[in-house]
Amino acid sequence: MLTHPTLHLLTQLGLTGMAEAFKSLADNEEVHGLAHAEWLALLLDHEATWRNNRRLALRLRKAKLRHHAVPEDIDYRAPRGLDRRLFDMLLKGDWIK
Image (tube, rainbow, N blue to C red; front, side):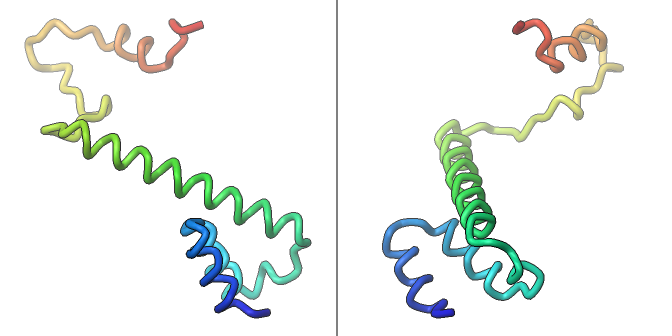
């Protein structure tokens, strides 16, 4: 398999995520038995994930958030009047339906 020209072409076309996946799949002996459609599906999935992650990182950088806050870090013991059950319900997203 001509991996170097393929990697170069994928990078030239702006498919960096797919190039990374191609390199890791080419080095992995376990996936050599996969059909072409399965290989392509893995490459496309990796490219889509790579782009989504890049887009999210850009949005987070542009937001200039001062703190990295996650719901798991909420201290319900502090005297702020937070209702844990209400937070859990909101986090599940059932209220959207």
